Length: 493
Image (cartoon, rainbow, N blue to C red; front, side, top):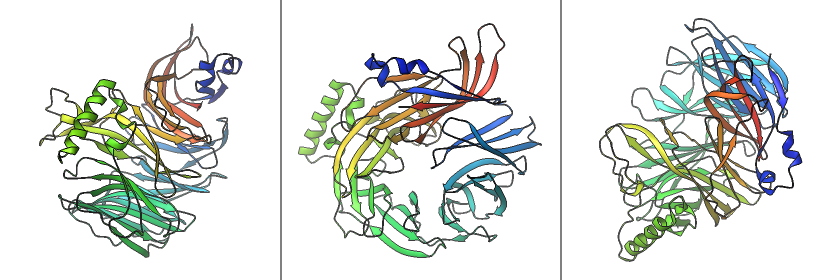
């Protein structure tokens, strides 16, 4: 049986200490009797401040499995639970929530066959339906607009990007129109529920220059509008996130490059409906804190070197690749966050600095992060502030987000990622840079218990200034037998 206990009540008694008052608290913990061998688990935050936990329990041969959805409130108390009938070979791949429903996609042994579930967050009722998607190889993005599905993946045969629209009542999806070049990739997909439209940002390149294309569709997959976003010859628009709003208000916030389109030279903002040659551009050297992940002397030398190269009309030497996060909308504007990374190659025996690493014809073995950044903009796209979170020994085998980013109601930007039994976090107050490393140990039920091992740790933003950390743990109480659990700890910043 799952147990919920309130922990760290003593934090409420420590207001006399400023340090403790500023440290995140862990007011409640939930332990589920799961183990990594038999259970796979996904934790999903819902817009109504609840959690939806999906878990699959299977045998060692994966020939028998049970699938469950359980909803928990803000105190991690169970609201309802339901089971669904899905073949044991299927595994979770994507989800999306359009209240009151949460949709999950599962894939099995046959690549073109997918199962979609729709769960009502109010009562737990779940519908299950199987689809055959012949053309798509893998689903990379999934949005829902007024109950209709929009899917991004790669064409199974041409390997080019693919955008599909699927009505739940129909058996086959339809291909949505777009222009796909050899170097085309999807940069963003946003289901704008208020304006009843779905916007897709496509990055197109011929290897020498790059542009963005924005296509808008209604819930039935009908094309509402198409914009080609061009810029002057010395700047190529690489990737961008799109804002919600009507067509006249929509903006793009993203990255731009110059000669080498693999690397980011800076960031830009631009109205979607604007004419050619408009927009605001902010080079990396203009940003106050972007280089603060370096030691002070190294940052000083880098800035001096790049300023000299700029005066001489030369290209910069710095080499940054940026993985953008979903745009955060604030009451007064937007926050754009991203992770600076570089590929690690199988044959590299020496780790060169980011600015000097060259990409040879080698197989990528992972992606290492140097820092995460956040930038605040007003509604017109003017840069208000920027800040940086230095990342140490953070890497991923696939190019996925490793840091969770959220904005608290008081305006703080919170970044966090798991590291075994700890959460490494950073709190940004606009452009006030903090170079200290902040760690929070995941608390167990009692102080005399010890987490002997943590596997598959994770953390997601939940609601307001609250996150939830989770993972599998082996817990050893003092004088008692160990237990293996899947934990969920509420973390309040």
